[in-house]
Length: 80
Image 1 (cartoon, one colour):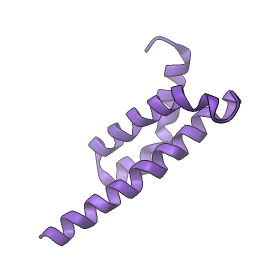
Image 2: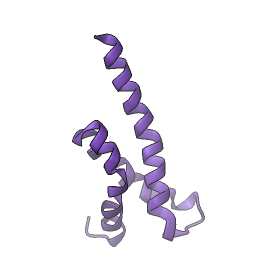
Image 3: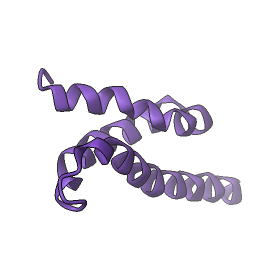
C-alpha cells in the first residue's frame, strides 16, 4: 500500500462513489477492491499509457459491478 501507484488507485477509486451511494458501502468497497486489482492489471491492455490507467480501470470496474448489483437487486425484488 505504500507504492504510489496503489495510492493513486485508492484516490481514483472515488470514481465509483455513485455505485456505493446507490448500492451501499459494501458494494462500494467491493468495487474499490476490484478497481485496485484492475489498475495493476490493465496497463498492458492500453499499451502502458498510464495517464488514463485509473479512468480505464474505473470504467471497467463500474461496467462489471453495476450490472451485477442491479441483477442482484432485481432478483431479491422478485424473490419476495
